[in-house]
Length: 272
Image (cartoon, one colour):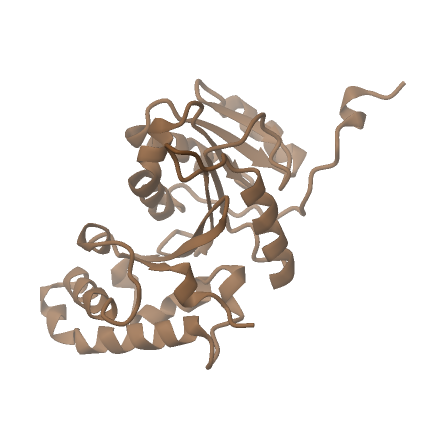
């Protein structure tokens, strides 16, 4: 007789290294709460998926806490392709937080309002990552008269979350790219290049938009050097303000003060 477990489809994807640390994804979480909180509040069933949370469940626990500051009804599902990691996370389940075995198929009923995939796609080839984007976007809540639809946030950060770059996508595809950093850790904005997500990291070469953007960002940072006497934050704000004269910056000073800048995807999208 075939068991129920044996009859389940095999999860889609491969096991990651599983590296995780408390507060590693705080910059991404706070951005999501700020820019997507209203959508989560409006959602009939505000489910957020922490895809590939790793060897320990800290990121899922923290995601629930941070999203509920913006949308108190939010529920989080941690999804991991490694069964042992799911078993280890089960003691951390609570109201609003569960863990499930799965992968890019997203084993939750319905369509989630949010999928966060941090440090998951670095091991894939660029064309494979593009296919994963398409698959995950198809699982998002669709757009409606009241909503732009669900949000996929996919990106990469360093081991303790000081430097982070992510792409935000809706059901229709990529929308924006966000660069975020603990400003004291940067010599120049292009230091963030090492954290570009898979869709962009191999495109940081002359002739590609992301390379031109980081070059111009470094120039704006150098020009803003006199503001360094007021602190790295004021220098960053001035540099981003100047950068916005030539690049489609999508946010404002409230986010810049957090060490962030968000740019329209179309401006940085790979050529060819």
